[in-house]
Amino acid sequence: MTARALSLEPSTAPPWRVRPVALCVVGVARLLAKLPPRRLRQVMETARRGARPANEAETLQARNAVVAMSVPCAGPRCLQRSIATALLCRTRGAWPDWVTGVRTQPFRAHAWVEADGKPVGESTDEVRHFHILIRVPGRR
Image (tube, rainbow, N blue to C red; front, top):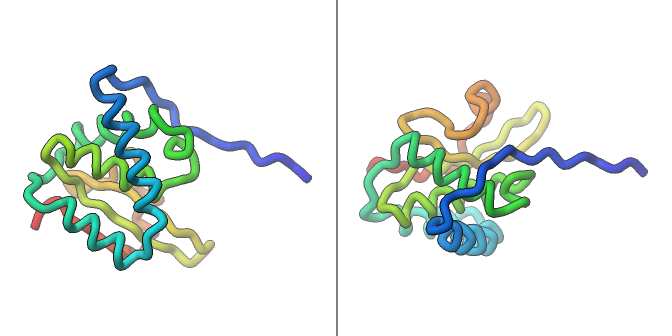
């Protein structure tokens, strides 16, 4: 049996005032990630209501705070990370595009956030190979 190395994203600790909120949204995201896709989409669409579109800088700031506060979000849990990032943006009155998708060769599912039409904190080349299944846009 060989041990698989876990690759974590680098992060810097967010300001003290952001940490409690980031921890809360990470916990909520962990629960929401267990929902069936249809129900999760409904919850995310409800959360988005009344928010303005998030810009790239604030989305990246939220994503970095989530990654800094949660080892699973810094590693393999892209669904939890993307949900938490969107919810943290929402606490500030904004909403990025929340996206999930799959690719077939090799099969892989992925979730991420976008702002200003670009994936935030993700490789654009990798994300473009995914077929989008769910998108909850920041703009209505």
